Image (cartoon, helix red, strand yellow):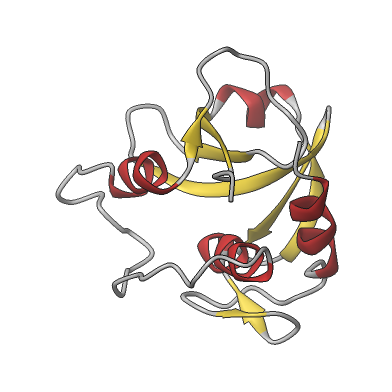
Length: 139
């Protein structure tokens, strides 16, 4: 369980949404939030190429999902823990392009366009969109 990841993510709540940014209090997108938590947990920064809001939809490559598999520890048991990273497909058949950090049994923290960094209920519509669950690597 990564209570530290949740505490760090909660400290970002209220940060405005800003595409491709990762600066607490100034702006971030969902990936920028993960990058900020990752850095605060003592890992070196995630190298990220520039990406557009329609990232990988044209090429239909699931880069975010594959990157998560390369950098994080995939959970396959269906038992998720607070602090796990959730990956979402926003539409059925689309690539994974949104993520958040599980903050409780029915809540997660994410940076969402038009809202900034918020803590949301993990409602059935959100839960249906989950395509991957990952824990931070052990240091």
